[in-house]
Image (tube, rainbow, N blue to C red):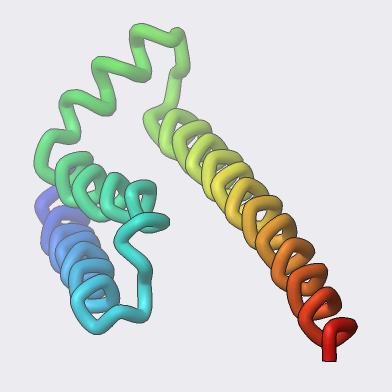
Length: 110
């Protein structure tokens, strides 16, 4: 990685990590749902500092450009986030249905 890229990307990736930690600390990002965000926050500075690992992995999967590997990882992360949100929505939908039924039973008794 070129020194100019390192000087730009390292503060951005570290700021992302700090932002994720602050959002968890303030309670704006729930700790039970943020495992993927924490992984992104740790991996982003690591990719900047260990760019050789990205190059090595790109050669292992026969990709000519490390940018393509980053896009592949980005799409995978987006897919995992969508899956995580779908799971959370399904769980909450079941809880809302149960609560609505319990409220209807309580209202009927009055």
